[in-house]
Length: 374
Image (cartoon, rainbow, N blue to C red):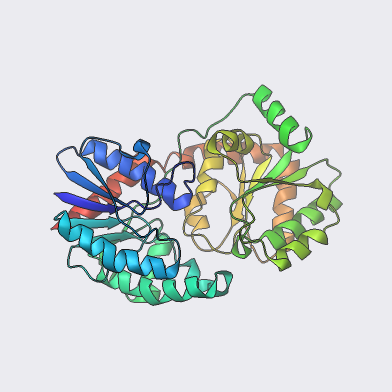
């Protein structure tokens, strides 16, 4: 079988969430199935590190697609041309986009529908594009893969897609993330938090990530607990809004908040494993990989009781109401003050984290591809 793959998010040194999903799954699938040929479709020059095996043919097709009009040109003109030229039997798109102008059977990975629930959090042209085309992509696909049962049901409910054609493949966790030594924890805290224990947030500084309530909750926690504890915020400020800025400026303990910016995986590994707890209290997630990264790092998790997060966390985290400052602050106090609870959460998290591996994801995604080819 000749499988063409949208690999435009395989960007050297710039892998983000869906880019990592693409990298981890394709590396395994291409190497584990040498009898099949893979055509990797890039929209710019590529790094050889992404050519994982001899059965991959890299193809660069313009234009570079990083905004709506260019997305449309790439997927509706360049991709159909490439599929025809290279005689593809199947098209896989790990970032959810498909081409409506090809008859080649297709599988897309729709990670979540956050743009449906929070359309105003995106630039208007982006939001319009997603809401116009993603329902069409979901209907056109032979199979739709997604990363949680929550996201599967969301696709069924919003787009009327038959549940039988949606495969849940979950996400995995980079094997890099794991426990570190007490000496490494001390060194990491010295570097990032002036030797203080810290609660950790990881993600884009985006409204749906609920930073406003996290800031308020941390303030309340510090006011009630005589502890030299900081809040470490890891992520880029691309979506930093005026409302988020105001919430930060109004904090009583804003001097105890540390912004690191985006960190590379090698740095993030130690930052996660040195945290007092992960505070991942988003309003919406299709999965929430940092939950699993923290569990694998022997770090307690505080996360939201909505969307996919309870599904991923199971009974191995403290679940909170993301709209309630009291709920989040109380959980922070519990983790900081109750050593037995911390130990229980770490032990449960260690077992829960074993559920989510990239080997499992790649295997399930391959099964989806095989179903689509029949």
